[in-house]
Image 1 (cartoon, rainbow, N blue to C red):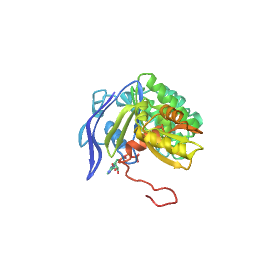
Image 2 (image 1 turned 90 degrees about the vertical axis):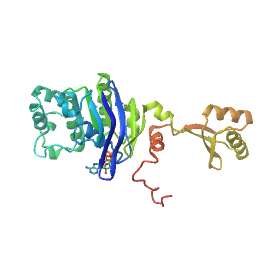
Image 3 (image 1 turned 180 degrees about the vertical axis):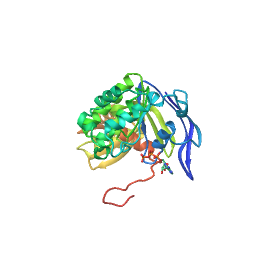
Image 4 (image 1 turned 120 degrees about the vertical axis):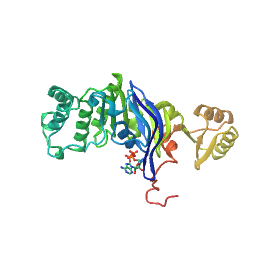
Amino acid sequence: MITLRGLTKRFGATVAVDALTVDIAPGRVTGFLGPNGAGKSTTMRMILGLDRPTSGTALVDGRSYRELRRPLHEVGALLDARAVHPARSGRAHLLAMARSNGISARRVDEVLDTVGLDGSAAAKPGRTLSLGMGQRLGIAGALLGDPPVLMFDEPVNGLDPDGVRWVRHLLRSLAGQGRTVFVSSHLMSEMQLTADQLVVIGRGRLLADAPVGDVIAGSGQAVRVRSPHPEGLATLAARLGAHGAIVEPAGPDELTVTGTTVDRIGDLAYELGVRLHELSPHGASLEQAFMELTADSVEYAGGPTGGDAR
Ligand SMILES: Nc1ncnc2c1ncn2[C@@H]1O[C@H](COP(=O)(O)OP(=O)(O)OP(=O)(O)O)[C@@H](O)[C@H]1O
């Protein structure tokens, strides 16, 4: 269990993390989401005692990182896949970590095996590792002490599709073993598949702490309605509007409707005798929900490609 209470970090005038209070529970994968600069890495660094909170607390199983007697056995973390010694091999890097923490060389080979780095890959000097291999090595380091709490900052960054699936299965199996798994990512579709619970922050503040399904359900699902009869479509639009739905024309023969269900629109069209060629739900994705949740918290917003930002 990771417990954050009023966790706050200021860098000069910047409030990187703002009074964050949340519990990250064992036995499930908790995705940590937020736009660039939202404060995710700073939060993870404070949990690991690498940044000192301005106020508030970050505890791992009830203790601050500095109080942990055998930290590698209590919390494992991958924060930066490029943080490996350029001349040292992956295996030597893990052996050094193991030795200074009273962990056997056998365990090093076990975790190398778990992450799929074979003898020749583990013998390569750090500077020659691809980003994907660095991620696997970083994950091996996090697993070294067999800790009950694990944190991964963007673990699928740089991995090919096979590697992404592998990380998904690994995270799910670690949670299945009853561990606390806290993972940040910008890949919404991947988080939708991997996480049970989501913690979403924006400008350092908590925006959501809920099961993935609830976060997605909270987004306004849009329904596309297409008909070959413009007059019928206009009548349907007016009736939907009168029932409190939000109706926007999406083309001469098409509407986008929010605030009601596919069933309700289908029933109304039937009652009015309006022939439909399409009635389909859109936008029920984590990506859509994330965009809505964080709309007011993005630091850098891009305009449409090739045009002026509106
Ligand atoms: N050492 C530092 N000194 C000054 N400002 C910092 C420092 N570390 C982070 N910040 C600022 O704190 C804010 C949060 O940064 P952080 O890296 O935690 O965000 P993040 O959510 O991890 O972003 P990203 O998704 O881009 O990795 C940003 O405004 C950042 O510029």
